[in-house]
Length: 257
Image (cartoon, rainbow, N blue to C red; front, side, top):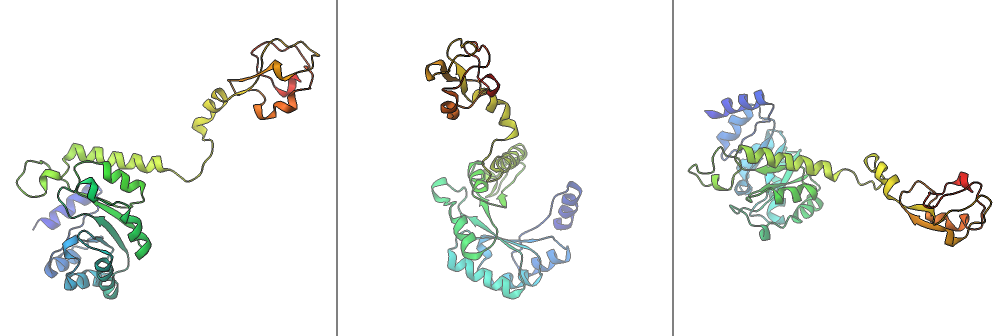
């Protein structure tokens, strides 16, 4: 009875609503509600009837792979695909509540992605945001996290779930991680350019150099700021003549020689 109410509330808040079916009646009910996608829980991945019913809806599917190996995951995918399932995301998952770091094996996400050629995410049952952030850095496109209004409520999931303020911080951490990942380009950024000019080094006069003086290496020093000729061009400067008086500590530019 809550499904329709929850779905409307989610729509009002701009949230996609979905629910995990555990029997055929639930699949039919959710399909009638026109949920945007189905979520299959880890322990349902060997329920062939359920998988066939979900696949037959033609809706996108997120499937957890906790308590499964590659063979079991592959069998579940075969059933979904043969039934009509096409848009599928795999969630790496450790069915331990709460899960501990030494058992997470987040690198298994890469194994799933390579083996099945599908987008991969992470179902996080740990007590902090650390593992989810690491999963995003490793390429997770979906993060699942349990959510509660109060950790002290009665029930098996509440103690390791996030309360509202924690969930907000959790999402911010993930979004900032995505921002920090950026692109694979290695270049000088606009935000770095001022420091690039000031903190880099260039050729300066080690002492006063009079106009007409032939410049020697001893007359030069490399120091900040980087507003003069770069030190890699020192050999092109040595042996040239000063076109004007150059004061000690002044950076040397091409116009001066």
